[in-house]
Amino acid sequence: MFYILWALKNLYRNKKRTIEIILFIAIISMMFFLNSAFLSGSQVQMKETTRNFLGDISLDARSEDYSLSEIKKHLESIKNNDVIESIMAEYSFGNVSVISDNSYLSNSHLKGYSSNYFNRLNKSVEWIEGNNILSNSNQAIIERSMATNLSVSAGDKVTVELKTREGAINTAIYEIIGIFIGNKYIHKNSLFVNIKNARNLGMVKNDYINHLKIFLKYPNNNLTLSNLVNNELKKFSNISNINVWKWEQDSIQFFQIFKYSRIFFIVLITLISIVLLIVLFFGIQNIFYLSFIKRANEISVLSTFGMPFFKIYKTVLWETISLFLPGLLLGFLFSFVVGNLLSSISLAQVSEEMVVVLGGPNLKFTFELSDFLWVSFFIFISELYASFHSLRKYFKLEIREMKSGI
Image (cartoon, one colour):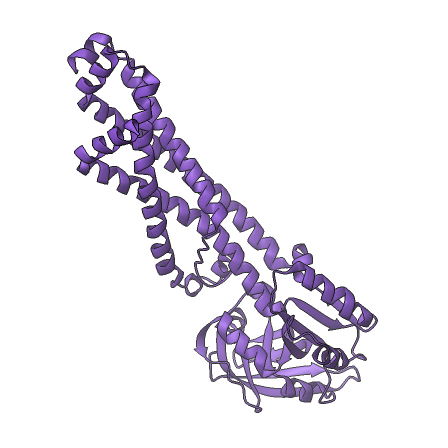
């Protein structure tokens, strides 16, 4: 108790220095927290972006002769209300040609969805122009990169040509009513239309489905995911391919590019963290060393009466802890506020490549307990060693200089 009270007394006597040290620690720790939260946030955003488009489980018909409508009815009929959040029907096909007044794209995709998918898309993307309210008339929405390739804006019209298996060429004209910021590696060159319009162009039955997206209520529960795949969906493996992107991340181009950009950020943030630790170490060391010089008479008297180095350091240790805790908590508070402010900034408006680099359109900061613990550990160890080293450095002065207070 003596050492704690002594430490608090020293901090109180030098209130200005104490506040400066706490703010210095807060700023350094804030930068640490933001760096770690950015790495965690980009990973979370990447998974959210992928899930919103691919679902937790996707089913693809093995050929055009199979419809997945029976699977949809089966999943809706069984007691999965506590497991499945929603099931989204899709009829899509590739190898269509899209023609605008200014450009032409071959090998594009036409994707017809039910309205609930567009509601989900509306929450997960940022709209540049228009909106996603599709009526039964021929309307479509597209991702920004395709809009750029076609040189179209909201309100323009495009012509879609599809060659059927029988060799006939079907055409349809769609009005672009919305352009959103997505991921060109996932969305590719795709026109998103109402599922009824897609069926009309493909000349298929009104209940025909060749893709299903399943969204789970608890997507991070791997046991539930495995049970649903193995117990309910494997029985339909003769007519459909079952895809779980979490199990096949390496096959998704977006994941591969994101992984390489993430390695770059990890290296960059590691270098920044090393520099911050060096700045923190020398900053704390110099501040404590100057403090010891001002307290030379006090330390000299204690040394003269036989108090060893490590007992004197007990006081310095409690001073370090008393400065570390408020500085760390204040730094975390700063990082939380700054992170929320930065999260509102959309870098995807600046460059479409930022969607891949950041995992989505925005800067995202996710503060996790593990990140808080390791940041706290490194900062505390750095401060501890800095205060210890500064006292040891001071004790290396000649006894004569210590007693005279020089």
